[in-house]
Image (cartoon, rainbow, N blue to C red; front, side, top):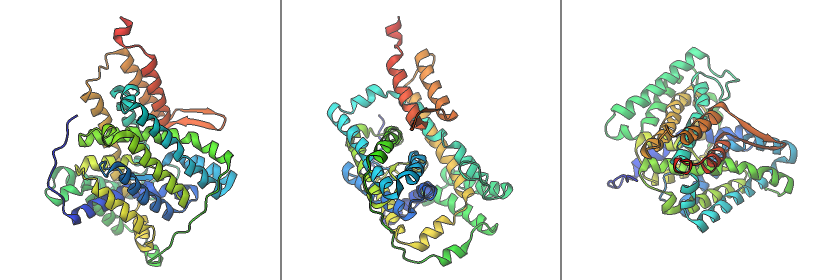
Length: 415
């Protein structure tokens, strides 16, 4: 795999600003999960920050990855909160880490080649594309002033499109034409430009920022452990675990390094599992690798893992800093929608690049079947439901792609 040449050390102040940019990118999705499920947003920030630092400790700070709230757990958390309560739900979420630890053990025992054997480029490529494309509707809805699911109108359509257009356009101009420092922070340029236009159009409520306290100590919830809640929650971990592998391969495609070999997929899985365990124990949603961050790294071409350390530190500080939290929450939906349209498309492009780089032959029927099925399953939102167990999204696409790759004979076997 092509490896990006090492550049001179980046000044700390630039690392800090790049880290702030990463947190800007992840913030909307990071706090959305607790807001939808009834968990504490401050605990989500604390879990993401500490979880990312734990991940970096396990992986030797070699992988430019930030861990944030996992969308896969939204519906299960809501059901569990209603059925078993907050304490039992958090205990079940902490136990989800066991799935990561088991996967890490399997990879450690059999080596990273087990991943390459079961997940070659024809499997990984479309899965990475789905990681980006499955969220395309969310980005477009946000750009049009709606909630991610499109059900609520948050900003009038015409106003939203202007703000999203400025946010999108400023990011593109900075990424393509800027020089020097501005080229390193195109997303901050887009967010800042979109936010300024939103202020001028009266979309920002500064009253909530003024009313927010400077310091706000998060409320910790002590988890309890009930078998029913744990057994209900464990299968959900299939989705983020499979997405983890795709994201690790995706970020490797961006930086030109094979992170499944060094530091090793077993370490990245174990580090992610530790983050999940910590988040559940303090009262936050499970954390997972973020596609938004992969898109941001793709655009900025800043591959220094130290910027993720800064993003993690800022997230921890934000968990206790009420004013800053209120400021970020004041960013209107269309601003982030304009950014997300570009970021999610960047992730999908990485999946396409994976297929091209491996010279995947789509004239070969088995390859065409695998890619076609994964794209339709993922974009169409196919779900496999058996009683309380549900498999959909990236997890269903991953399982389908792996099974098709194993079951369909290669051309040599058919001839």
